[in-house]
Structure formats: C-alpha cells, structure tokens
Image 1 (cartoon, rainbow, N blue to C red):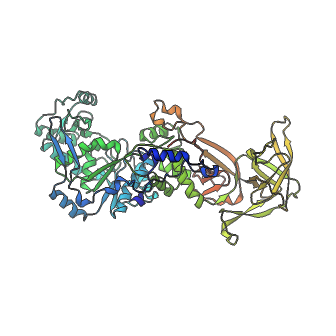
Image 2 (cartoon, rainbow, N blue to C red):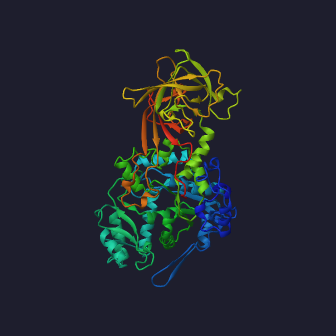
Image 3 (cartoon, rainbow, N blue to C red):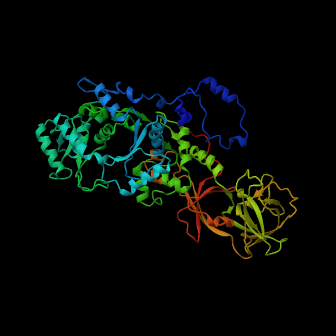
Length: 619
C-alpha cells in the first residue's frame, strides 16, 4: 500500500526531533540551482512512517467493535456485526473488498475529489477488489443531469474504472420500506415542527412534542407524505435517537422530507426524499461496501451511521475517516464554487482559474500529474493546507518529459537584421526535446529565419548591466537555434519614449559567443506577420493562502488571476495544434490549446510557469 500511496508530507509529522533540527541547521545552504524545486518537491520521510490505511482489516475480520455510542441515560450501544450478518455478507461478496466513490451530483468535481477517488478506487485496486461510482442523489433541487454526466466522464479521465455505476435513487423503494420498518420498531416518528422550531429544540436539547406519538399514527402520516397528501414543509420523518446526547448528530436527525420536485434520475415518481444521514449508511450496507471511507468532517456522524444500521439489523461496513485535501489560494466548497460560477466571477465550472478537475484539465493539467500529487501528499488524519506549488511541481515533472518545445513571443518587439537580404528565408532545425538526437528527425521541427524577427519586449533594455543577459545597444545575444545578433540601432517614436523597432546585424559564422540566449519568431515570408495566437496567463485565484477563512472572501479575489494577450506571435508549425495539445513555450512555461480556439486563431492557456513563482516558507 505504501508503494501505491507514496510518501507522506511534512504536515503529517507532528514533531521533529531536536537532534534532527540541529543537524539540519548545520547543513550548508543549497546552491541556487538546487533550490529550483526545493520548496515544492515531495519530502522524503522514513519508511516506517506508514499510512493507517495499510492496516485496514480484511472483510472477514469485520466482526470487531466499530463504534461505541454513549447515550444520555448512561447506556452504551456496542456496534459490530453478528456472525450471522457477516457470514451472509461474505457469501454475497466472496470476501472481496468493495468500496464506493459517492459524489453528490450538485456541481463539478474538484481536486479534493481526486483524493477521494485515489482513496476509494486505490484501496480497491490494491486489495484486488472493486469500487462503485455511486451518485448520492438525495436532493433533487440541487442536482442536474449535467453534473451526473460530468462526474462519470471525469472519473474516467482520472483513470478510474468503476465496478458499477449506481444511484442512491435506485434504492428509493428499499429505503422507503426500511423507513416504514424503522417506524414499526419504534425508532422513527413523523414530526410537524418547522425548521426554526427544530433548530430551537435542538439547541435546548428538547424532545419534539410529536416524538412519542403512536406508531400507527406515524405509519399513516408517513404514507400520506409518500402519496403527496401533506404539503411541503408540513411534516418530516425523524429518527428517534437521543436529543440529550453529547453528540449533536444524535439529535433525532431527519430521515425524510417532502419535496414536490422532479428528480433528475428518478423522474417524478417520488415526492419524499431521504436525507443523506438516512440513506448513506443504508446504501453502503445494501451494496455490501466493506470499507466506507469519508473525510474527517463525517467522523461525528459515525454514531448516527451505526445507530441506524443497528436499529434495522443491517450489515455494518468498516468506517475510516481521513483529512480532506485543502489547497492554498482557492476555495473548494461547492457552495462557494457555485456562487463564483453563477455570478460570473469565473468563466464556468471549467474556468482554468478554478481547482475543479474540469478547470485543471482545460488549463492543460494531466490526470496523471494530479494523481501523482495526491499520492505524494499521502493519506492521513492530519489536516493541513497544501500549497499550490506542490501540485505545480508534479505538473512540471510530467510536462517536462511529455510537452514538446516550441517558441512563442508574447509581447513582440521587431528586430530588423540589416546585413541579411530581404526575402531570404532560412529553415533551421529547432529541438522539440532538449535531449534530441541528431539522427532522429521526429525530434526536430523547422523554423523560418528571415531578416525580420521578433523578440520579447522584456528582453531588450536601453541600458546594459553586468547581470543582464538580454539585448541592449551595442550588445550581442544568441537567437536560440539560429545566430548571434548585435543591436546596432534603436528606432524610437517621435516622443522618444516608445521603441518602434531595433536594427541589428547577425553573425552567420556563429563565432560570437554571447551569454544570453533568447527565444524569437520570424516573419515566414517578406511582409507576412508570424502566426498570431491568443495567450491566457493564469495566476492563483485568491491572494490569501486560505480565503475560505475570510469573512469577505470575495474581496480577496486576485484581479490579475487571468491576463489575456490577444496578439502573441508563434512559430508556424503550431497552426496544426489541436484542442488539448500541450507545449513548452521556451523560456515562458507550459501551455495547452484551449477549447475557445477557432480555425482563424488558436488560444493557449498557460498551465504552469517553468519554475515555482510562490514565496517560500509555506507548507
């Protein structure tokens, strides 16, 4: 399991020994070239620091006590499977591990779901078992067919193959029948309190006035709810748990509510819908899930989870909670994400600024680099905020090996080469890969070189300095894959403030050996501009590392999270690039072709810069 999940992060170690700290202080400072990925590279930790997930019991050992639920009267409910229940479960499953990835289809999946997928599908894969993709679709008001389709597609894109695709709504009839049985056993009742009254009574730990109504009366009223005879908001079915319990998740949670809303999967067959707290554990049991894995915010729900399964005499899965994935400079609450999308702060659920998986894919991030990131941070019960540069490290690691090199100039400055005849075009070899072998034609592409080339405005200064390697008057630089050029004249506007173009001479002998090397793009033929493309530069969406903690989180939005360069120049071979293709623009970063591209104009999204641009010192 350690090989599957990878090394843990520094955040998973609570304390370092003083001896180790002293040793680290004595170490020599790193050289600059060693620091390139020092802050975002995975931290190597002792092999003995194992993941708790490695110690999960096999299905046949799921007879031990899961949870002890203390009640306000001093009694304690011991939750475990009986031999009879476990034997029946093993007979059905053959002893195989069964997990489930259960997203609610109320929005697009984000990078936090990538961790959940890695845990759920990863455990099943490691144990030779199976993982369901289950839509937890109990709230028809928030769920859409669009989200259902997206989830299935993005799970496949992430590289996971579900054993079966199911819906909680597939079990609505069974859930209803079990609710009737729960009433018959005296463990549920129909309540008429308003949401405000329920909240007030819970705060005061008071029982509902309808809590002890006759079982027959609750059965009749629940049937009326099912048949649409009671108005929405006038009745709920509540579990009879323990209103005086120390755990607020035992305060007679709602099992069913009335909603006269068609369901995106079940249609208009139902007007009552089960709650998450009621349906989730029961469907886990119905599907014979062996290991029910959730994030830590569900830990306090263990009591209600096992209480309900015990009350109905159902099989009880093994439950374990782990820390959710929190990434810096973004929000991952679906409520906040939906607000950003609905109110046009971003360009849809797949906006490349977002940490949705669709947004990351559109930005050019691969599923394998996301999985490598999740594997690298490990799985633990320690909450931490993972810096975005940790993800960027894994993106660079992959794209450095898989993205061919090309040249694009974002802010073109015209250079006229005066000692080269106008109309002369040379076709030079440029490397697609840094380690390209001379005899491998596929590792090269042709770039035109003419007497008019374009360099970045930022690569020219009027005044030279010792630590500057760009072009300046009287100074030489090397045009990558081409020739050295020397600036001989600067043509300024009438106001002497704006550089119109530069005149230079090139050294066809290549005897000049300047230190500076620049990327460039040339006119492919006399008077014809290079290929024009749009380039979108993306930065972190929020200025603060943890905007979710801010009361006014919207004010923390980074106004420069997206910068559009409408008229960049690209080398000609890029005209055949297709949506999703990834490249390294030399000296600029990694870029991918966006879906907004047209036959007339390509649009490129910057996936990530060539090196970490975050300030040091974070986790």
